[in-house]
Image (tube, rainbow, N blue to C red; front, side, top):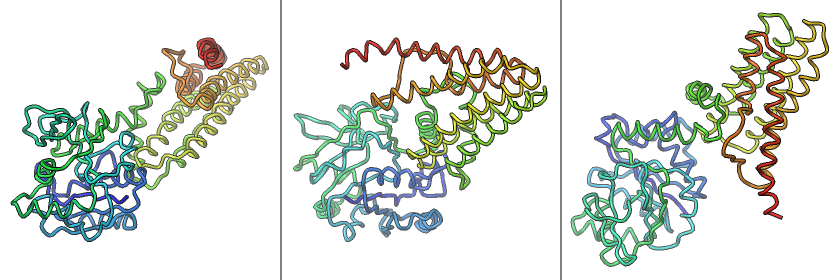
Amino acid sequence: MDALIIAAGDGTRMCNSKPKILLNINNKSLLEYHINTLTKLGIKKIYLVLGYKKEMVEDFIKSKGLSRRVKVIYNPDWEKGNAFSVLAAESHIKGDFLLVMGDHYYELEPLKGITRIRTDFAMVVDSEPLHIDIPEATKVRIKNGRVIGIGKRLKKFDTIDAGIFICSPSIFDFIKKSLKEGESTWNDVKRDWILDNPVTLYDVKGGLWYDIDTPEDLARIRNLIEKRTLWKPRDGIISRYLNRPISIRISNLFAKTPITPNQVTMLSFFIALISAFLFGLGYRAALIFGGISAQISSIIDGCDGEVARIKGMSSPFGAYLDSVLDRWADGLIIFGMAFGYSILHSSISIWPIALLALLGSISVSYTESKFESLFGKPLLLSWGLPVKRDSRLFLFMLGGVFNIIPLVLIIVGSLGIIESLRRLLLLIPQGEKSQ
């Protein structure tokens, strides 16, 4: 199935000199979001209908190396109405196609089943809208399973038009008929269609999508995307309230550069190596800077995933690399802390404590990852001790800054083992039920 994005309008309500398809949303254009989503849906060919300042969009496509992924179609009648933009693609599209409003943002997950639909006309709707401005939305009225009304001014409605459609090539002749009758917009065409033809509805039920018409809309969708893609519900307490507000700012800067998520992962690991080395020196100033380096590494460790989500570069290998290097970094920092303390105090008593800290650290990570691999779902418990990596590295920082290395290692090790045992005990009933 092909996709057609219509983006020919001038977007006067945006008070912006560039086409809306180029709007920047958290360091990525709306066009790039569309391309990434459509590609993940299995779309092979993407057509983009342009009109207003088409040269600006074409230059952007070339600068981003997107020419092979997007074919531009020019609509000379773009000022007459967006129905003309759909019709402009008639000579290019031969089969069923996905029609996408270029000034909308769509989250991938709710759309994953849409390309399996085969019909002359299907409409994506939202019966449980959570994020949009309903007074400004296009409403849909349904009676006895049939769409009987479409429009922004409907007083009674059952769902919201989300701006994505599946059409067969027969839609082009229908548009010509509507245009001859004096219609000009895609909404006009839809209203004509429902008079005598059925419409298949695909309900996203509260999924994230947004019609971006004004600067206020743009600010809201930026905030929504940042919260949903960069803030993680499973963040530890240090990540949520300290690391993440800082790492998001850094990630937004990284996203403007060619740096890749895996390179950010390596940067975090390198800073952790510096921390381990400084801890290993043992003297007071080195411990302070070793602790600070551990916390900096923790902040940067959150950036690799953020950059991956911003740039659409998430990958299983990236997650695997991050997990492996995190374990190595933790072990090396603990070793550095123990080595520096043993040299400074000429004592080997720190080594059993370091072993405890290492076991606690590994246990927390292992019990979580093993649960996910065996049960195929995240380990979500109602509460837990603050033993995730963000908390461990924060404690390591406190250990270096306040020169309390043994105490910190005891806390990290003890809490880690207690939390692992707590998880095991809470999951025993679930394991018995699965047998």
